[in-house]
Amino acid sequence: MVSLTAPYVSGFLAFREVPFLVDAVRRLQAKEPGLMPQVILVDGNGVLHHRGFGVACHLGVLTGLPCIGVAKKLLHVDGLKNNALHKEKIQLLQAGGDSFPLTGSSGTVLGMALRSHDHSTKPLYISVGHKTGLETAVRLTHRCCRFRIPEPVRQADIRSREHVRKTLELPGPPALGRER
DNA sequence: GCGACAG
DNA sequence: ATCTTGTCGC
Image 1 (cartoon, rainbow, N blue to C red):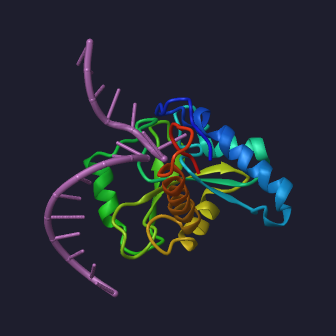
Image 2 (image 1 turned 30 degrees about the horizontal axis):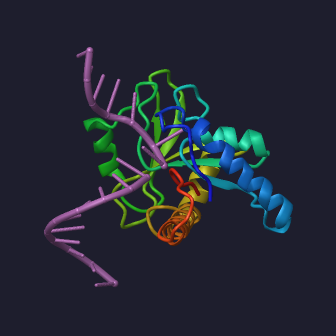
């Protein structure tokens, strides 16, 4: 269990969460090196970011592991916006695996909006974090989706919440925030 | 000036 | 993110 201190500020998520993520990877390396993943799906963005360097990039550089940014909402950057036009494109996504590029005003493709499975309406926003191409990132993410949220992220979410629930209900030292 | 804009 | 209310599908 960790206690977050830095506040959440859009565009600065890495400064709040990456230290704990790096620590988790380090602890795994020390305790169960055989379980070290070949790639990490990060709950947040990679290069789809104000300065082209979101939490998925930070974690990749700090650990040397391939990382993929998987965001649930579109971060408004480089002219990208969740407006009517964007929503129309989402409507055009038919089956799971369908996607369309997220091209900023600068002409750069910052990521892809992905319909993660057949029965999902709201897309996932995939972007390169570290040591991976965008196409690979999108395909791998799609293959991890039993539901809208890719299973690795979903399980981390479910299990961390459960852990916090069981830890917080009993008397003990107070803690602020929670992290996976 | 305020709100929006990963979690 | 968190919280709350209501609905739909398996």
